[in-house]
Length: 414
Image (cartoon, rainbow, N blue to C red; front, side, top):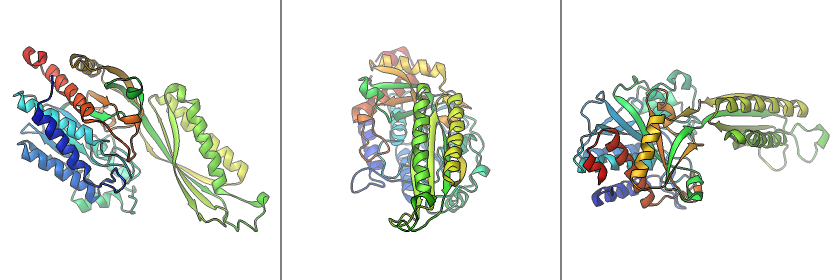
C-alpha cells in the first residue's frame, strides 16, 4: 500500500510548517513547554485539523485533539505524541507522531474508511522547562497528580500551576472514556534500526526515568590562599559523583539500564574561588523495576560515602519517578503483521527513551512504532529522518488500523 500523493504532500507540508516554529539560526529548534512557541505549534495543529474538515478541541491541560468523531466519548483509537522540544533540539522528535498520525487519518478519509480516530498533541512531554516529563499526557490519564506538581517551576521561575492559570487551563481533567487503545509513532532516538538496516521498530517496553537533584555544599574560599588539605571543594565531590553515576549505569547495563549526569550548576563558578556549592541533575532509566531500584540504592550509598569522606554536606531529592511499562502483546503482534504486510523490515525492541505512551499503558492497550533517525541522533540540532522513513511509519499505522478495525480484504490486499 502506498500513501496517496496528496497525503504525502500534506504530511511533508505540515512537518515543514512545524519546523519553522522556534527555528534556530544554527539549525534545529527550541520550543519549550507552555511557552508561546509551543502554543503556536498547537494552534497550527488545530488549524490544520479544521482545514481538513475534522473536529478539533482542547482539554483543560492544553492538550490538542483532532478527530473524525463527533463525540470524544465515542470509542476510538488515539494516535499521538508531543510538539514541544528540548533546548536546541531537532524538528522530528514528537512532531513525527503528531504529523504522522494526522496523515494516517487523512489517508483513511481519502480511502473512504470509517475508522474512529483521534490524533492528540500533548503538552510538556520534554522535561526541559519544568524538569518533569510527560506532563500533558500524565495529567490527562492521571498518571501524574496536579497537586504533586504544585511546586514545579519553569526555567523562568514560574510555577506550573500559575502557568496553567495564565493560559486559562484548569489543570484537571477526567480520565477519557472513549479511548480503546493508544498508538504512538516516533523516531527511534538511537542507532539500533540504522545499524541493523531495519525500517521499522515495534516497541516491546519503555524505560522509565528515576531523576534526582543533588546539592553538594562545601565552602567557597580563595583558590590561591587556601591549602589543598583544608579545602571543602563541592565541584571535586561532584566529579566523583559523576563518575560513580557512570559506573552505576555500566554495572546495570546488563539489564538495559543507563545512568547519566546531564546538568551541572556550579557556584560561584569563577576561576579564582574554590567551588562552594554544586548542583547536579541525575537521570537513571531502565525497563526493569528491580534494576532501577538497585541503581537508586547504589546512588544513595555512593553519594553518602563520597560526601562523608570529603566533609561535604548534601541534599539528594528525587524529582521525578515513573515505572517502566510493557507494551500490549496483541498490539505488538498486530503491528508486526502490518509491517510485514507492507513489506518493510522490522524488529521488536525496547525503548530507552521515555514517551507519552508511558502515561497510557496503565489504562489502555498501548503500543509504539519506531522509524530510524540518522546516526541515532536526537535531542540535537542534527536530528534527521527522511520523508521516506516517515511515510513508511505512516503506512504501518494505516495498515494496522485497517486490519485492527476489520478493514475489508480488498483494502488490505492493495
